[in-house]
Length: 148
Length: 148
DNA sequence: GATCAAATGTACCTTTATGTCCATAATAGC
DNA sequence: GCTATTATGGACATAAAGGTACATTTGATC
Image (tube, rainbow over all chains, first blue to last red; front, side, top):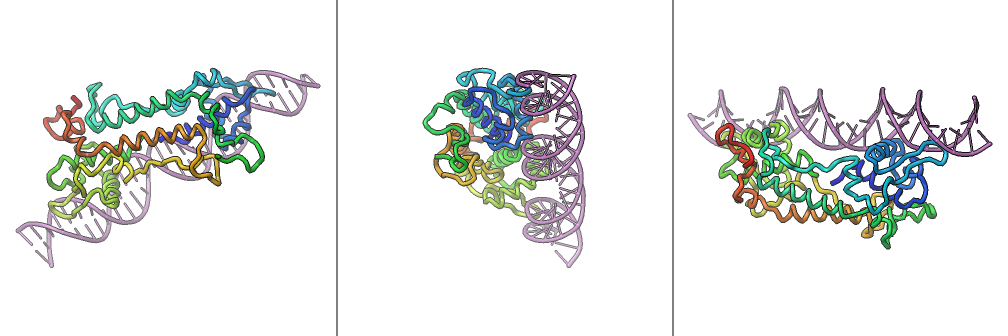
């Protein structure tokens, strides 16, 4: 459905949305359970796409570039692994633009549904709900970080 | 969204739904523009999953195992590249079953939407509509096989 | 039963996604 | 200015997806 990379990016972004100050790559990696080295690659992409600001040195780390209300799941997914829409029939070299065969119309519609759902989900919704964000993986006691 | 393999499988199945008699692997590969060698792999999976029957020798080939009304996009996709539902939070080793954090609830809901849409689309709908199935890639004159 | 036309099965290759490692650059505190 | 701490960048390693090639098996026809 979405790539592992997009999943990791979403975890990191939700985590950042929960923080009041800058979070280090290592800190994010630990609580979101993402391989640290790989996460740093992903964070770089998020910085380049202006979803996150970074700061080096002591006290540095990553911070959301916009407020959580202004960042959607779709923004994050598209930053690291853009959703590909079907605009022309894959069977054609020289496309005819808007018209798709029935099969690709269905696939295209499904993609549009997902895009809409993702666009409507903001990071703010993902941290303010009754359920714990990220399945309570924010350090509590070692064995409490489970879904509940 | 869906893998290349699933896309190929869908093209092949739509093509089969249009045929009155058995179609050879080569024939399917040509009109659906799928690499022949790779298509044969995919056809084997469809046979194993009982969506297609095969027959060797002269006059042989592939035929749908059920009527096009009884085969959905979801059936085909799941046969070659199963859609993975999110049943437990990926952040947890020992899962807590039904409850997901807000993020994974959203992702799970999106997957469910897609599954529903795919389950409701039958092969029969993909060949009986006004538009040409498979973007008219069924051999007409060489330059006519375009979306329209 | 010989031959031809098809699918099947196996091995291998290429590309992309995922993941690791380490050297480098920037920043804050002393 | 020195040091510790952080992100950045590049090279490399591994795994999975996509793709190719070819020998083998099965079935129909003559």
